[in-house]
Length: 343
Ligand SMILES: [Mg+2]
Image (cartoon, rainbow, N blue to C red; front, side):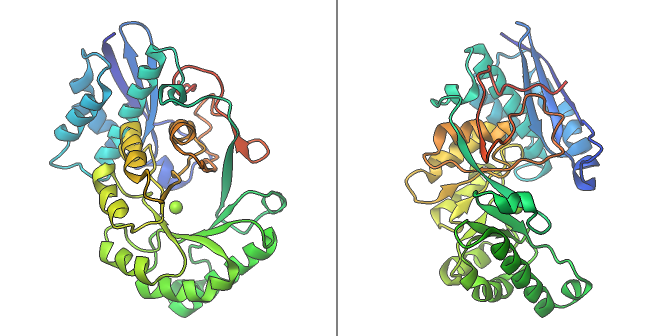
């Protein structure tokens, strides 16, 4: 079976937020083969990602066999090396790699989870990510909740102590809303620094926060070393890190207790599998970003003994066949590949 066409496009959903809809939004990848099988994947990088696929990645693959996928990954990584390694080029490559994995499993008439040694149908627990306050429906559930704590008030934007106060009061309100038993995490989205993270951690310690996510820049490894040694609350991260090469120091130096690769950005399934293998036996958890979306879900179901899937992004409804979260669990249906279409 040979690859006849690699095509990338950007589906537009009315409700996608501006940064996902425009230049750097999610892209769909469709790979056609001589046997009539079609592989689908989702990557990132918007128009720039599409340009990289059309001009560099597609010509590498067209006319080739679909296997070995890992060799194609290496060829794509090498071809983008001068401007790639992290960011948009790897986000584009991720979509192509996922489409190749979709084909790899379809060629074996298996779902991706089965190809990886797991089974379909298992109930995979989820956690909910909320951007505003905890709504009533989320408050009634029993699964973990993660709160984004981007500054809200004018005072929090201007003044660090007001920002810390706001984070503490919002975290306390979320804890109050979900009660004392459920796990609660917060996401800083790279907006803090080390002293601020330590100050927040001291203030929220009584609120039993499971992790602080991406408090500082992913490039500030020295900062993460300090947080590993001094922060009382576990640090999560990796949503904006790329390839197993980028994850290596995070794992070897245990800079994050929870690793959160995004399979649509970090280099595709090839890299997510490598990251799982590197983390295996270290005691670190892998909880992929947007893990309930099919692209990460199949790896999570097959490779993780304690899977926890983050709720997906609601505006990704152009992924047809995505299983929904029902009663706080998600199940992979019986279907070949990732079981979705993007036409
Ligand atoms: Mg995050």
